[in-house]
Length: 393
Ligand code: SF4
Image 1 (spheres, rainbow, N blue to C red):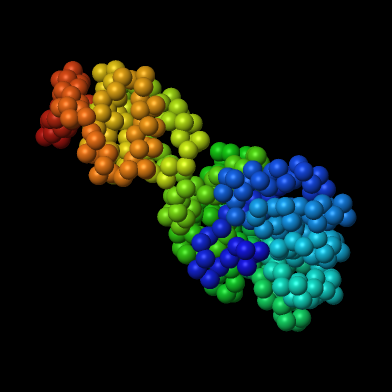
Image 2 (image 1 turned 90 degrees about the vertical axis):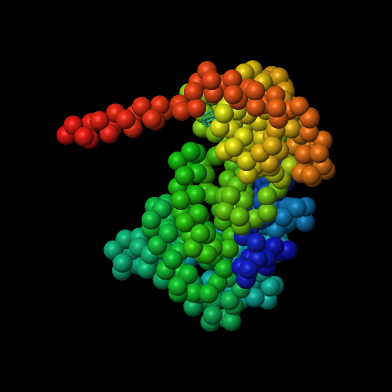
């Protein structure tokens, strides 16, 4: 348990982030913690690098909406000070606090207070001895670093831990966690460290974290982005929701990539829809499709959607057209229908459909098919060409 949040043992996978304010700035840090919690963070970490930070934590902890982890790097005294401040968890970097008596003192104090510790091994700050022994950052070196720390903890009878073995190199990160999961039976905190700014940072983190989650490895996650930490939380939540590991709290927008058939600016309308829905908590799948020829069919699994055709939008619920609206009202109509759908349910909204909508929509579809043809790729002609060429050779 990190405060009231369970980690591991079949608990929902939690999302973490870290504040970038000075922890001594209590109001600034609390404002950021609230923003992170509002975006869906379950746990927030703050650095505890100096006495003023520890004092700040003493004021922050009782006012925080989520459990607080204190990040300790070099000074074990800061770990003890953070415990005095009442934090819910410590993160220790074994590469930075190396004196066994210091590590044991912190573990012993955590045991007495019932506070867990994350052993946060980081490829970049690996103990030089391990670096030398293994000839660099390797999965074995990272896992041995965690095991050494575990042994110090065991010496004082403490095992309330979770572990991370982060690296900035994605394949190394993945291999390290796989080895760790085979070696120990503790909750694991996943992350690609120093992933950098989006979009590359998002891609690297998703590749590493997503791969491991798909293998059933990992209990809590953090995206380490060079960006507003709220972006880390949004990405973490979205990954878990996309993988079906956390319940959806907001809209899942699907949109076609657009093509020559598109009757609208799909990218623009999708963006407009995303912004309009961002202010709502509607846990449904919404589709924005560029044309009525293929759109409603391809998005029939979506709860609700809109497809464009002949300056009009076809609004559909579970693939069935319920209304035809002017193109400029598409997003507004989509939002209004989405709200009604969440409130009343699919059956009620299908029953409330405009009686002539389906027929009207079919007319648009047929007209577009006539003007564009039903085969945008001219497949039949191409196949004939291929057959001709093959027979000639
Ligand atoms: S829905 Fe229409 S516009 Fe969008 S990709 Fe498919 S065919 Fe193209």
